[in-house]
Amino acid sequence: MNVSTLQTCFNIREPFCIIAGPCSAESSRQVIETARKLRNIPFVKVFRAGIWKPRTHPSDFEGVGARGLAWMKKVREETGLLPAIEVARPVHVEQALKNNIDILWIGARTTVNPFLVQEISEALAGTDVTVMVKNPLNPDLGTWVGAMERLNKNGIRKIVAIHRGFSFFRRSPFRNAPMWEIPIELKRLYAKLPVIVDPSHICGKKDLLVKVSQRAIDLEMDGLMIETHIHPSQAKTDREQQITPEALKRLVSRLVFREKQLRKDFREKPAQLRTEIDKLDWELLDILSRRMEIVKEIGVYKKENNITILQIKRWREIIENRLMNGKNLGLEKAFLQKLLEIVHDESIRVQTRIINNEEREQ
Ligand code: PEP
Ligand code: MN
Image (cartoon, rainbow, N blue to C red; front, side, top):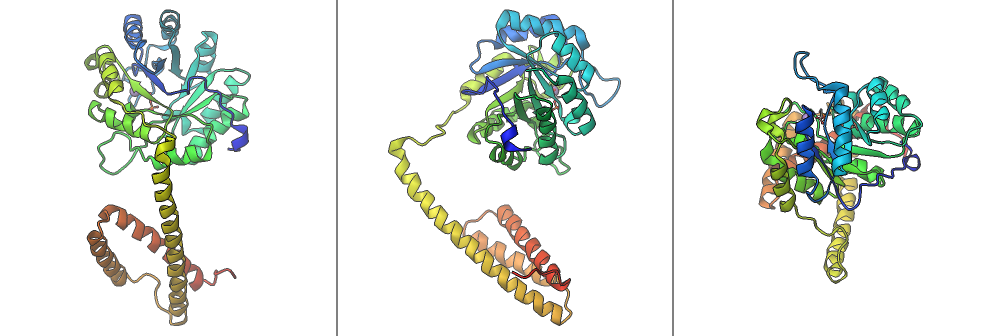
């Protein structure tokens, strides 16, 4: 995505935005009662509800369909909250546009499919609606960005990314692993793009919601999407993760908004510390570069003497020894292990190039 082409004018970005509402619209009463209870909660500006639901099994509740559009319009008329619904096909877009729905979102199962995203983007061409794009199910920043590029190419300017976590094969306390490095990289690449975090789909249950919401704020994300239902235990979809509007109000009151900019009187100390960090980072880079030079020398030796690149015994010794030393220095084991693996992978890559005569002239 060409940074300069991605203009967003998401007018609900400042100062922080909460999107709340049920996973699914179930009845006119459920929708309007939820919205009435949400309208006075701080930061809540958008009312979400899925009317077409992407479900795992064909016999599961698949949403109320187009009749829910009128309920969403009523929410705006009565409460002023902006309605948002999921669209997954051009026909959904057409019906949403006909009913003046303010905000549409593309779900994780759709973002992953360029054909569908293309069709949706074409159906949206020439309109001024805000489109929120959830990350794809798999941890692939390229596909996420690609979906936003398609919308952008079709003239959509008000684009928002929604981070809802990624399917993950390892055991994890989350329904969808947050992998914060991915939304952080997205924000680094596209400074103007608002990124909203969806703790409901990340957590999959209620008890981690506050923690993940606070993490999102601490990482300077632009808002939250939190599923809210007047009777969560009776919800037709995502029952475990929905909370009542009252619980959302309590959650919001517990959030801590820290200052993004350091106040003048506090600037000096962090500035000193940052200078020290800069210096240490330079030393770290210098050490890494010197380590790599030695790795190359060993590579040349291995090549001349026809020795295998990976020597498992030596690698095991390195890991054990470094982890023990790291522990004495107060470093976290998991962190150090990850770091050693990255350095080791790079060493193997460098030596493989040498052995295969691919080493470029420097
Ligand atoms: C939803 O928001 O209810 C939903 C289906 O989300 P996702 O696409 O993130 O799974
Ligand atoms: Mn849901």
